[in-house]
Length: 540
Image 1: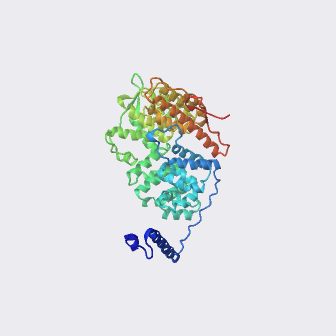
Image 2: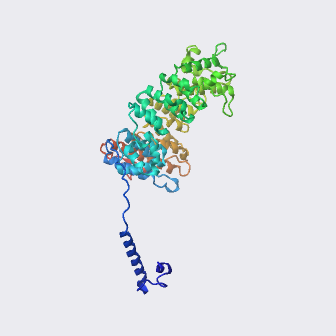
Image 3: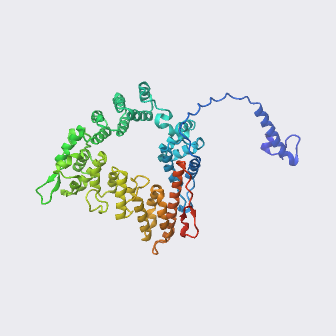
């Protein structure tokens, strides 16, 4: 030790001097270390973990397993220099879709991929539900051994298995002693099997629950909500918590036949009616002048947000909670389209239509949604119904996937893509025709018109994830044609790169589908250097 501290020149190790002193010192240290290690007594062995549970689901096909490894590796790839994505697909954005497809087909994750899969789910909360579903019981077993993956244990059964809903004793024990996340998962499982038993479970401890827990439990009743829940929700209207009362009122208003809906309808129709004395039938509104005790008990919030008038705030709450079925009779048997098209006196139109939009979304009423959406080709600012894109997106979600796609396709064809991003986001994936064709045509037109390309990057990203893979053939022409001559500097290169990336991504998604289905892999697109921009051409 002294030689090591002072140096072999000043204190050479015993018996050695000169050039070999340093080597002799290291040899002596190595011998001493070896003797010390050899003389150690072994410590007590750690208790081995319980074996990983069996997962009976089928394993991924080999090609799909390799694809998962590539997507997980690409998730953490560094961002391209300069912020340009290039023409290569964005693997991080394809991972959620791959996980959804794999879970839908009932596969389990390869054991070797579990660490990377859990790391991906830790980094992105949007991946967690499907990543944990694919990881299955072995993923939860592994998560218990690494504190960095403890997020996985907050879900169903906190990493364990929920008891059988029919095992009343086990259900009661977990309900009374489990963690909050376990109890939420248990309530959902019992309610899915036996709604009455789930309701009884919640009612048994309702008064002893914390306000924030009551709110979460009540919110879980949205799934499978039915008229049988009315009595319990009426009790919740008298809750100490304002948020609990408001949620109970919202759920009751989604039951048009409930007594609550009848009370709100009676209030709403006294505020909104038809003036038949005018030259043109006109909707007249007389908003409430006060928020009485009965209204507050039914969940009407008395104090409006900053910037809102009291009377319009109260009116909106009454109208959105009233069943939409009460309005045709109030307006002389008119249809929803005819009611929405009526003029509204005294600038109440926006407030009234916004409340009807919320009611249509809450009650999942497709007829009223169509009326409030209006014709897609009519400019939103001048047509009947709502001009708000956020409200339109919510209304579209109440329609069937095919009808939704047709409406948005017509909107894109009439108004372009500048206002359609929010609407495209609610359409089912992959986009049904004619929506895909409308988006491709609109992108092609924007490029030909010399539009500023970077403003369409969001739509391009959506198209990569949502277009049907079969649209790649339709895109070969836009990818090969140069842009407008008067386009912004660099725009032509951007458009070309974006279209090539779109084609490459659709090609990759087609292979993903084939691999997960166990079919022969779709041949990758080869590049023909004789074609402009290297447009992909499929073999055969």
